[in-house]
Image 1 (tube, one colour):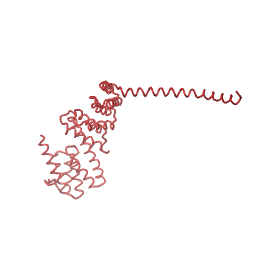
Image 2: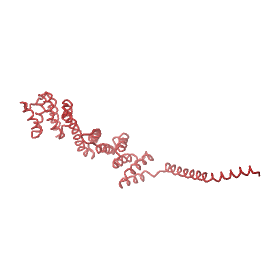
Image 3: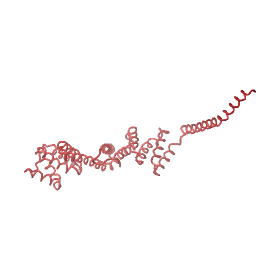
Image 4: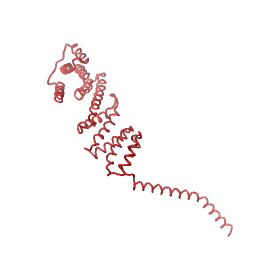
Length: 293
């Protein structure tokens, strides 16, 4: 062998020596990947039975591992979509997300359940989860009330569709809280308009409270503020009527005393107009309450 050939042979040998560890690593990685793929395939072909998966997920939920529980319930639904446990696993996954504070995930999962399985025994629970997730994310009266309105809608759905469920009974108090929050928001915005002497803007907000949230504690002040705003606008008859309705329904209210003094300072007194929308609204409320009683 001449010197040139020997040199080439030596270089090739050195190259192979350097390359062999890399080749070995690649082969090992390939074997591991194949092994992992085989395990994944085996898991897909032979998942745990649904009852076992449900018990595992439920145990995670009990131990407070809410996100792990939600994932396990979702695995059950994916691996055994036609099992008896799969349907309940959807609503339980939503509940686990709710307990974890993952409200968007809880709402989306529970909504999926109500869409796929309306009228089932778990449906009231699913609506309760949706309503509770919105309710727990309600902002203060000076903030946007979008979640409050959504919570109110879901709680009303509960009481309308499933009046005999335990969740419907609990929803009644939450409905009152939602309505009070919405009324407080209208009062907050109305007072901002009032301070800036934007009479029409404030009038509209106070009228919403009187029209839609008559059973809340805010309605007394709303009626008094309507006396104040209507006097500023020169709509005297509406001011007198608002004061009369306030006095008739809340004679001992401090807001009625303020309304009475305000009218008296202009030589006026409360006077009800039965054709006025506030009077009609209040008669309807009284009639409705009497029928329920």
